[in-house]
Structures are given as C-alpha cells and as structure tokens.
Amino acid sequence: MNKHGGYQGDNKEMLDFSVNINPLGIPAGIREKLIAGIDELVKYPEITGVSAIGKIADDLGVRPENIILGNGAIELIYLFARSMGQGKALIVQPTFNEYERALKLYGWDVVHHVLTAADDFTINPEALAAVIKNEKPQAVFLCNPNNPTGRVYSKGFIREMLEHSAPEISWFLDESFMDFSDESGSLSLVKEARQAVFILKSLTKFYALPGLRIGYAVGAVPIVKKMESFKEPWTINALGLIAATGVYDEKDYAKQTKTYIQSERQRVFEALSKIKSLKVYPSGTDFHLCQLLTGTVAELQRGLEKDGMSIRTCEDFIGLDDSYFRIAIKKAADNTKLLTFLKNWRNE
Image (tube, one colour):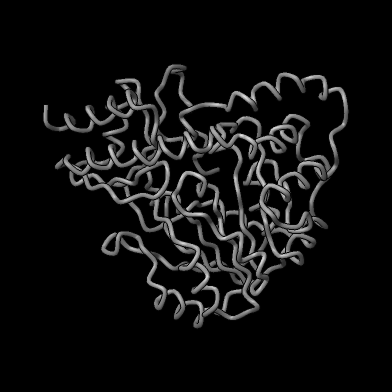
C-alpha cells in the first residue's frame, strides 16, 4: 500500500505535517451532533444514506440523483474504477497515487501527462489537449487543488479544457481540498451537463473528521447510476451520516477556516521563500510542496523526527524525487516551530 494517513511511529505526541487536516479541529456543532447521536449506533443506518444525500443536494443546489456517498472519498475513487468499465485513463501528474492503483487494479490502461518543476507544475492547456487528442482516453483524472503541488485552477480554466475535449470523455475532478482554497469549484459543470463530469469531495479534511470516513461526489447522472449499481450497501455508518447532514450548516467555522488558512498559508510561504536551502511552490490550499536544494528528504525527516515533527516525503509521486516534501498548514505556533527547524537545518 502507498503511504497515507500520516505518521505511523511510536511517538504519540508527534507534530505531523504530513496530514492535511483542518488545524481548527472538529466544528463544535458537529461534535455536539455526534455525541447526541451515539444511540443511533444500535440501529442500522440508511443503506445509501438517502437523507444525507438529500440534505447535501439542498446545500449545494443540485439534484439528489447527482450525488453519491462514500466511506471517505477514497471509496469513490475505487468504485469509479470498478464500475466504469475497462479502458484508457489519463492522469495529470504528479498527483495522488491512489487513482493509478485503483485503475490498474480493475484493468484500466493508464497513461500520464507529467507536469514539470520548470513550469511550477502548472497545466498548459494546449499541451494537455494535444495529449488527450493523441491518447484518446475514456477518462481523465485531474486533482484540483492538486495534491501534492497545491496548484489550484479556476472553474473557467476547467470549463475551457472540458469544452475542447471529446464529449465522450469522462472527467474525474478531485476537489477534496477545494474548500481550503479561494476558488468555488466546478459544481456548475455538473448542472450544465455538457460533459460527463464526476467531482469528488471530501468532508474529512476541511471538517477535521478523517477517522469518521465520510465523503461524497457530485456527478453526471449516468455515472452516478452506474457506480450505485456496483456499490455495496451500508458503506456509511450512522455517525458519518449525521456529520454529512450537518457540515454545511457550519458557516462560521467555514469562514473562520478560510480566513485563517489564507493568512497563515501566505505567512508560511513567505518564510519558506527566504530559506536558501529549499524552494517552495505557490499553493492555493492548506499545504505547500517544497524541494530541498541540498541533501535528501530522508535525512531531513530523520532530523525532524528527533525534534518531534514529521513531513510527507514525496519520492513516490510520479514526476518527483527524493528532494521533494509536502507540509500542511497547522496552528501558527506549530508552523513557526517547523520553519525555525528548516531555517537552521544544515546551517547550524
């Protein structure tokens, strides 16, 4: 298995910058609803989560038949690959490596369009269009904001790419980190129904609920129906359904999060930019991709762990190597501790 889920060592107090979870913690309203709903565990939950689907549809202004729930966003990645047949899929790299694992597991032919550091890992629309025209994939996978580069694209940018691609292509757009960004996302593309679009959303990152495993997607009706026909019953537990019906009521929490992330992301970026031993890439979400200009991240990781911190090394991402690492935005004091270490590393 690929390395996800954060630090797995023995230090229970490890300050883990490898997980991109909201540093503000669980919203108070959701915490209260989960505690109050504990007795729901003596009952079977809804098989498909129809009530949560209806609430999310109302919150987003889409039809319930456009929504499918998952045991975390990860379930829906594998369900898409399992249910949509076997063909060719194009993945824009470097990116989350579970797309490729899921696709290959279910017999897809996978090709890559690899972005480079020379272009700050930014898509050139003409170059991507040329690759799509040449490869003729049945599906294109694009993470926006992208993990691990942090690059975020506007809805207009995404719409233009889709409009210049063959109409039979299914676009898998992973927007798991979109809520942390200043962009609105591409939900309107599903409402317009001009292309086969499937937009993956995560509730666990922005609302700090990774242990609960709850995610959803908004997609073209034919895609959702196809996936539902392959989906196991009861993949969402009762507490997950309670959380799903309440997250979008947490408007003050969402506003506070966006304000904090925007400000702290910029502070961290400016501080990282002044460290001569590394390069930091611009980000539109709650983490930064960095590259060491000397040494390896394995050496850096060993030093950090001795000081009670951990980062996400990125050598397993296609297009990156052992000089790259990713760090999440945490609480200000924690970020400052990491910045101080990075500034002094190799300069002591």
